[in-house]
Image (cartoon, rainbow, N blue to C red; front, side, top):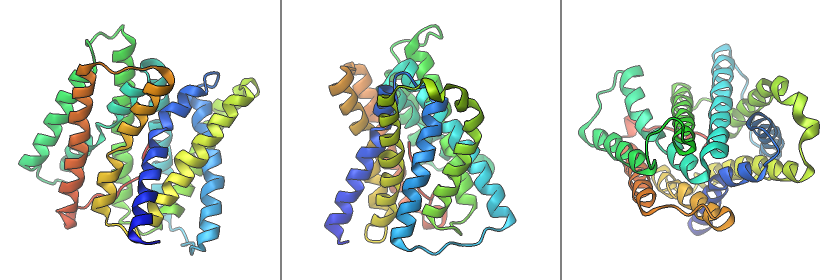
Length: 296
Protein backbone atom coordinates (compact mmCIF):
# COMPACT_ATOMS: atom_id res chain seq x y z
CA UNK A 1 0.00 0.00 0.00
CA UNK A 2 1.49 3.34 -1.07
CA UNK A 3 0.70 6.79 0.32
CA UNK A 4 -2.03 7.51 -2.23
CA UNK A 5 -3.92 4.24 -1.74
CA UNK A 6 -3.52 4.53 2.05
CA UNK A 7 -5.07 8.00 1.96
CA UNK A 8 -7.92 6.66 -0.18
CA UNK A 9 -8.43 3.80 2.29
CA UNK A 10 -8.61 6.32 5.14
CA UNK A 11 -11.33 8.33 3.41
CA UNK A 12 -13.30 5.14 2.68
CA UNK A 13 -12.97 4.15 6.33
CA UNK A 14 -14.13 7.61 7.45
CA UNK A 15 -17.10 7.34 5.07
CA UNK A 16 -18.06 3.94 6.50
CA UNK A 17 -17.78 5.23 10.07
CA UNK A 18 -19.91 8.23 9.04
CA UNK A 19 -22.62 5.90 7.70
CA UNK A 20 -23.09 4.34 11.15
CA UNK A 21 -26.05 6.52 12.06
CA UNK A 22 -27.59 6.11 8.61
CA UNK A 23 -27.61 2.30 8.77
CA UNK A 24 -28.87 2.48 12.36
CA UNK A 25 -31.83 4.58 11.28
CA UNK A 26 -32.55 2.36 8.27
CA UNK A 27 -32.90 -0.63 10.64
CA UNK A 28 -36.24 0.81 11.72
CA UNK A 29 -37.78 -2.26 13.37
CA UNK A 30 -34.71 -3.09 15.46
CA UNK A 31 -34.13 -1.66 18.92
CA UNK A 32 -30.77 -0.03 19.76
CA UNK A 33 -29.82 -3.12 21.80
CA UNK A 34 -30.46 -5.44 18.83
CA UNK A 35 -28.61 -3.12 16.45
CA UNK A 36 -25.55 -3.07 18.71
CA UNK A 37 -25.69 -6.83 19.28
CA UNK A 38 -25.85 -7.52 15.55
CA UNK A 39 -23.21 -4.93 14.72
CA UNK A 40 -20.76 -6.41 17.21
CA UNK A 41 -21.45 -9.99 16.09
CA UNK A 42 -20.86 -9.20 12.42
CA UNK A 43 -17.82 -7.11 13.36
CA UNK A 44 -16.27 -10.09 15.16
CA UNK A 45 -16.61 -12.13 11.96
CA UNK A 46 -15.14 -9.35 9.79
CA UNK A 47 -12.24 -8.63 12.15
CA UNK A 48 -11.47 -12.35 12.47
CA UNK A 49 -11.27 -12.61 8.69
CA UNK A 50 -9.02 -9.55 8.47
CA UNK A 51 -6.69 -10.85 11.17
CA UNK A 52 -6.51 -14.21 9.39
CA UNK A 53 -5.73 -12.64 5.99
CA UNK A 54 -3.18 -10.26 7.52
CA UNK A 55 -1.61 -13.17 9.40
CA UNK A 56 -1.24 -11.07 12.50
CA UNK A 57 0.29 -12.77 15.49
CA UNK A 58 -1.95 -13.15 18.53
CA UNK A 59 -0.60 -11.97 21.86
CA UNK A 60 -1.37 -14.01 24.94
CA UNK A 61 -3.66 -12.17 27.33
CA UNK A 62 -2.56 -11.34 30.86
CA UNK A 63 -4.91 -10.67 33.73
CA UNK A 64 -4.73 -6.89 33.32
CA UNK A 65 -5.40 -7.27 29.58
CA UNK A 66 -8.55 -9.28 30.26
CA UNK A 67 -9.81 -6.73 32.80
CA UNK A 68 -9.10 -3.85 30.45
CA UNK A 69 -10.78 -5.56 27.49
CA UNK A 70 -13.84 -6.35 29.59
CA UNK A 71 -14.09 -2.73 30.73
CA UNK A 72 -13.50 -1.52 27.17
CA UNK A 73 -16.21 -3.83 25.84
CA UNK A 74 -18.74 -2.59 28.40
CA UNK A 75 -17.90 1.04 27.57
CA UNK A 76 -18.13 0.30 23.84
CA UNK A 77 -21.54 -1.32 24.32
CA UNK A 78 -22.81 1.70 26.28
CA UNK A 79 -21.35 4.09 23.71
CA UNK A 80 -23.05 2.34 20.79
CA UNK A 81 -26.43 1.85 22.52
CA UNK A 82 -26.62 5.50 23.57
CA UNK A 83 -25.56 6.61 20.07
CA UNK A 84 -28.31 4.60 18.34
CA UNK A 85 -30.89 5.85 20.85
CA UNK A 86 -29.76 9.37 19.91
CA UNK A 87 -30.21 8.50 16.21
CA UNK A 88 -33.74 7.22 16.73
CA UNK A 89 -34.73 10.13 19.00
CA UNK A 90 -32.98 13.13 17.50
CA UNK A 91 -31.91 12.07 14.00
CA UNK A 92 -28.58 11.29 12.38
CA UNK A 93 -27.22 14.86 12.26
CA UNK A 94 -27.77 15.67 15.94
CA UNK A 95 -26.54 12.23 17.03
CA UNK A 96 -23.38 12.51 14.94
CA UNK A 97 -22.53 16.05 16.02
CA UNK A 98 -23.33 15.35 19.66
CA UNK A 99 -21.05 12.33 19.67
CA UNK A 100 -18.33 14.44 18.04
CA UNK A 101 -17.99 16.25 21.38
CA UNK A 102 -15.76 13.45 22.64
CA UNK A 103 -12.44 15.33 22.11
CA UNK A 104 -13.63 17.93 24.64
CA UNK A 105 -14.53 15.19 27.13
CA UNK A 106 -11.11 13.62 26.55
CA UNK A 107 -9.29 16.87 27.34
CA UNK A 108 -11.21 17.29 30.60
CA UNK A 109 -10.96 13.63 31.67
CA UNK A 110 -7.25 13.42 30.88
CA UNK A 111 -6.70 16.37 33.21
CA UNK A 112 -8.70 14.67 35.97
CA UNK A 113 -7.58 11.04 35.57
CA UNK A 114 -3.96 11.49 34.46
CA UNK A 115 -3.35 14.74 36.38
CA UNK A 116 -2.29 16.53 33.21
CA UNK A 117 -2.54 20.30 33.04
CA UNK A 118 -5.13 21.54 30.54
CA UNK A 119 -3.37 23.92 28.14
CA UNK A 120 -4.79 27.17 26.82
CA UNK A 121 -5.36 25.79 23.33
CA UNK A 122 -7.18 22.78 24.78
CA UNK A 123 -9.43 25.16 26.70
CA UNK A 124 -10.22 26.74 23.32
CA UNK A 125 -11.14 23.27 22.03
CA UNK A 126 -13.65 22.73 24.86
CA UNK A 127 -15.10 26.22 24.28
CA UNK A 128 -15.53 25.62 20.52
CA UNK A 129 -17.30 22.30 21.10
CA UNK A 130 -19.56 23.83 23.76
CA UNK A 131 -20.60 26.71 21.47
CA UNK A 132 -21.12 24.26 18.61
CA UNK A 133 -23.41 22.09 20.73
CA UNK A 134 -25.48 25.11 21.79
CA UNK A 135 -25.93 26.06 18.13
CA UNK A 136 -26.80 22.49 17.08
CA UNK A 137 -29.79 22.39 19.44
CA UNK A 138 -32.60 24.79 18.40
CA UNK A 139 -33.75 25.21 22.01
CA UNK A 140 -32.85 23.44 25.22
CA UNK A 141 -36.14 21.80 26.08
CA UNK A 142 -36.07 18.37 27.74
CA UNK A 143 -39.45 17.62 26.17
CA UNK A 144 -38.13 18.09 22.62
CA UNK A 145 -36.73 15.23 20.58
CA UNK A 146 -33.75 17.31 19.45
CA UNK A 147 -32.63 17.98 23.01
CA UNK A 148 -33.23 14.38 24.08
CA UNK A 149 -31.25 13.10 21.11
CA UNK A 150 -28.39 15.50 21.86
CA UNK A 151 -28.21 14.40 25.50
CA UNK A 152 -28.01 10.73 24.46
CA UNK A 153 -25.33 11.68 21.92
CA UNK A 154 -23.35 13.51 24.60
CA UNK A 155 -23.51 10.40 26.78
CA UNK A 156 -22.24 8.43 23.79
CA UNK A 157 -19.34 10.87 23.39
CA UNK A 158 -18.51 10.67 27.09
CA UNK A 159 -18.43 6.85 27.04
CA UNK A 160 -16.30 6.86 23.89
CA UNK A 161 -13.87 9.23 25.58
CA UNK A 162 -13.62 6.87 28.56
CA UNK A 163 -13.03 4.01 26.11
CA UNK A 164 -10.21 5.96 24.45
CA UNK A 165 -8.57 6.62 27.82
CA UNK A 166 -8.97 2.97 28.78
CA UNK A 167 -7.15 1.98 25.60
CA UNK A 168 -4.52 4.62 26.29
CA UNK A 169 -3.90 3.13 29.73
CA UNK A 170 -3.17 -0.17 27.99
CA UNK A 171 -0.18 1.51 26.30
CA UNK A 172 -0.93 -0.31 23.05
CA UNK A 173 0.44 -3.66 24.22
CA UNK A 174 -2.13 -5.57 22.16
CA UNK A 175 -2.48 -5.12 18.37
CA UNK A 176 -5.38 -2.79 17.55
CA UNK A 177 -7.32 -5.43 15.58
CA UNK A 178 -6.98 -8.02 18.33
CA UNK A 179 -8.16 -5.54 20.97
CA UNK A 180 -11.11 -4.46 18.79
CA UNK A 181 -12.07 -8.08 18.14
CA UNK A 182 -12.12 -8.99 21.85
CA UNK A 183 -14.00 -5.82 22.77
CA UNK A 184 -16.65 -6.52 20.11
CA UNK A 185 -16.98 -10.05 21.46
CA UNK A 186 -17.61 -8.60 24.93
CA UNK A 187 -20.26 -6.30 23.44
CA UNK A 188 -21.97 -9.29 21.80
CA UNK A 189 -22.09 -11.22 25.07
CA UNK A 190 -23.28 -8.18 27.06
CA UNK A 191 -26.18 -7.43 24.70
CA UNK A 192 -27.21 -11.04 24.01
CA UNK A 193 -29.60 -11.36 27.04
CA UNK A 194 -31.30 -8.05 26.15
CA UNK A 195 -31.45 -8.60 22.40
CA UNK A 196 -32.38 -12.29 22.33
CA UNK A 197 -36.15 -11.94 23.00
CA UNK A 198 -36.61 -9.54 20.09
CA UNK A 199 -34.36 -11.11 17.45
CA UNK A 200 -37.15 -13.05 15.74
CA UNK A 201 -39.22 -9.89 15.23
CA UNK A 202 -36.50 -8.06 13.29
CA UNK A 203 -37.36 -7.67 9.60
CA UNK A 204 -35.01 -9.40 7.10
CA UNK A 205 -34.20 -6.05 5.47
CA UNK A 206 -33.16 -4.65 8.83
CA UNK A 207 -30.76 -7.58 9.26
CA UNK A 208 -29.17 -6.49 6.01
CA UNK A 209 -28.58 -2.98 7.37
CA UNK A 210 -27.24 -4.37 10.63
CA UNK A 211 -24.89 -6.71 8.73
CA UNK A 212 -23.61 -3.81 6.63
CA UNK A 213 -23.17 -1.82 9.82
CA UNK A 214 -21.11 -4.54 11.47
CA UNK A 215 -19.07 -5.58 8.43
CA UNK A 216 -18.38 -2.25 6.73
CA UNK A 217 -18.85 0.42 9.42
CA UNK A 218 -16.91 -1.58 12.00
CA UNK A 219 -14.83 -4.45 10.63
CA UNK A 220 -13.80 -3.04 7.23
CA UNK A 221 -13.51 0.58 8.43
CA UNK A 222 -11.34 -0.39 11.41
CA UNK A 223 -9.20 -2.69 9.26
CA UNK A 224 -8.65 0.03 6.63
CA UNK A 225 -7.71 2.45 9.39
CA UNK A 226 -5.18 0.06 10.94
CA UNK A 227 -3.71 -0.93 7.57
CA UNK A 228 -3.31 2.69 6.44
CA UNK A 229 -1.37 3.59 9.59
CA UNK A 230 1.51 1.54 8.24
CA UNK A 231 1.95 4.29 5.61
CA UNK A 232 0.06 7.37 6.86
CA UNK A 233 1.03 9.35 9.95
CA UNK A 234 -1.43 9.22 12.86
CA UNK A 235 -1.77 13.00 12.61
CA UNK A 236 -2.98 12.79 9.00
CA UNK A 237 -5.30 9.90 9.84
CA UNK A 238 -6.90 11.85 12.67
CA UNK A 239 -7.55 14.86 10.44
CA UNK A 240 -9.11 12.65 7.72
CA UNK A 241 -11.38 11.05 10.29
CA UNK A 242 -12.54 14.53 11.23
CA UNK A 243 -14.57 14.25 8.00
CA UNK A 244 -16.68 11.46 9.52
CA UNK A 245 -19.54 13.75 10.70
CA UNK A 246 -19.56 15.51 7.32
CA UNK A 247 -20.05 12.23 5.46
CA UNK A 248 -22.76 11.06 7.86
CA UNK A 249 -24.75 14.29 7.77
CA UNK A 250 -24.47 14.58 3.98
CA UNK A 251 -25.79 11.05 3.40
CA UNK A 252 -28.61 11.53 5.95
CA UNK A 253 -29.50 14.79 4.19
CA UNK A 254 -29.77 12.94 0.88
CA UNK A 255 -31.64 9.84 2.13
CA UNK A 256 -33.87 11.08 4.98
CA UNK A 257 -34.19 14.74 3.94
CA UNK A 258 -32.76 15.75 7.33
CA UNK A 259 -31.98 19.26 6.14
CA UNK A 260 -29.71 21.02 8.66
CA UNK A 261 -30.53 24.63 9.50
CA UNK A 262 -27.89 27.36 9.00
CA UNK A 263 -27.49 27.46 12.79
CA UNK A 264 -26.86 23.70 12.92
CA UNK A 265 -24.38 23.96 10.04
CA UNK A 266 -22.47 26.68 11.91
CA UNK A 267 -22.46 24.61 15.10
CA UNK A 268 -21.35 21.54 13.17
CA UNK A 269 -18.55 23.51 11.51
CA UNK A 270 -17.26 24.61 14.93
CA UNK A 271 -17.35 21.04 16.27
CA UNK A 272 -15.58 19.62 13.20
CA UNK A 273 -12.96 22.39 13.40
CA UNK A 274 -12.45 21.44 17.06
CA UNK A 275 -11.94 17.78 16.05
CA UNK A 276 -9.23 18.76 13.54
CA UNK A 277 -7.65 21.10 16.11
CA UNK A 278 -7.65 18.32 18.71
CA UNK A 279 -5.96 15.94 16.26
CA UNK A 280 -3.23 18.44 15.46
CA UNK A 281 -2.62 19.15 19.14
CA UNK A 282 -2.29 15.44 19.88
CA UNK A 283 0.20 15.02 17.04
CA UNK A 284 2.31 17.90 18.32
CA UNK A 285 2.61 16.32 21.78
CA UNK A 286 4.19 12.84 21.32
CA UNK A 287 4.42 12.19 25.04
CA UNK A 288 0.70 12.66 25.43
CA UNK A 289 -0.41 11.26 22.09
CA UNK A 290 -3.86 9.80 22.38
CA UNK A 291 -4.41 6.54 20.52
CA UNK A 292 -7.31 6.70 18.09
CA UNK A 293 -9.89 4.29 19.40
CA UNK A 294 -12.59 2.73 17.31
CA UNK A 295 -15.03 5.37 16.14
CA UNK A 296 -18.77 5.30 15.83
